[in-house]
Amino acid sequence: MFDKVIETVAFKLIKLAVTELPRDVERALQQAYKEEESETGRTQLKAILENVELAKKYKIPMCQDTGIIIFYIKAGSKFKDLHKIEEALRDATIKATKEIPLRPNAVNPFTRKNTGNNTGRYIPFLNWEIVQGNGLELTVMPKGGGSENVSVLGMINPSQGIEGLKKFVIDSVIAAGAKPCPPIILGVAVGGGADIAIKLAKAALLKPLDQLNTDPKLAKLEKEIFNLVNSTGIGPMGLGGKTTALAVKLEFAHRHPASYPVAVVFQCWAARRASAHISANGEVEYLSHRVI
Image 1: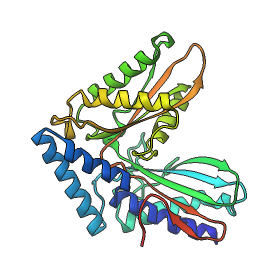
Image 2: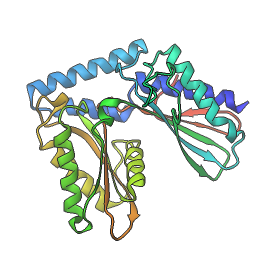
Image 3: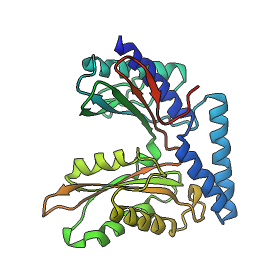
């Protein structure tokens, strides 16, 4: 029973994600438009906002690059049919590719053959978290190639500390320039190992933009990096202005004394994500979007 519910909800989440921005992201873009001082920057932000409205109105993807499909799964340990979730999410991805439609983006890296349905080896990619309870929370993040291509990992010298972290992030933003389609959202993670930092940085992109970090020191550092990024003047779509970033979200893991991994994952203005909770009795609550 639950596999069909999961497939239906996952399909709906993919459609919501590619056609409607989460409310916090849309509000951030609207605020950026109000505050942008560059006429060229305002023109770009206006075009972005008009594009967002048209996508929502006509239920069509807001960007031609509908991304690689990534799911984050927070599963209650007592949720029924845990073993059926992966298949249900693959089926939902195939259906979404055909019916929304999505651009087929799953390509074999060696043969260059496209599967044609956005599924393949480890795609859609599933991030699992097992928690107490009998419910299931699903989040989808369709991650576009333009912003992904400039994401970086650095292993800086531990002696560089916070100043080294800030320099690495700003250098990464300057090197990326217009490529990630700013205004961007940055997921920044420090510590763990190379793989841990990258995973945490990408997951940080799921945090609501209007939600402050619960750690006051990290909230202050996020604001400082945010201001530094916007001082670069890269601006909307790289054409100049004060709005290069909509938000910076920090995450961390404890690290080895000899290692200081820093990961910076870029998200474009089309910060697509959608979440829902499925209760043990099959009731569904959509968390990121208003669903009538």
